Length: 131
Image 1 (cartoon, rainbow, N blue to C red):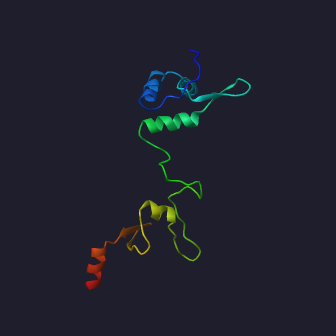
Image 2 (tube, rainbow, N blue to C red):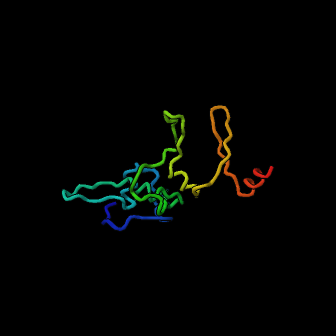
Image 3 (cartoon, one colour):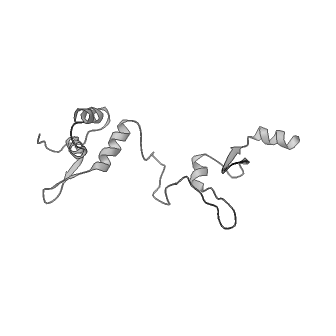
């Protein structure tokens, strides 16, 4: 099945081809779907990363939503640790993802080995202050 290189398959066409080639190894499947490049020495290099990203995107699972990363900083780990002074800091990545603004308030509920933060609405704040 020797073909000249064309644009890699995407979307439904990619998913259909992957299904048809399910009996082949993943590198061969990626190559048959157009996810490869030929080097100066006429060697073929399969681009599995782009292939996997295209398959996920075709299934509606984008790995990098537009505007989510600007190339700076670290990826969120969804973990925090207690600092020497006993404080726990929640980074701006998380507060931005939640759409929080400076001054937003939370009620802290302590459980056995967990902490729940419940965002207070303006109505709840007013009711709580009046009581």
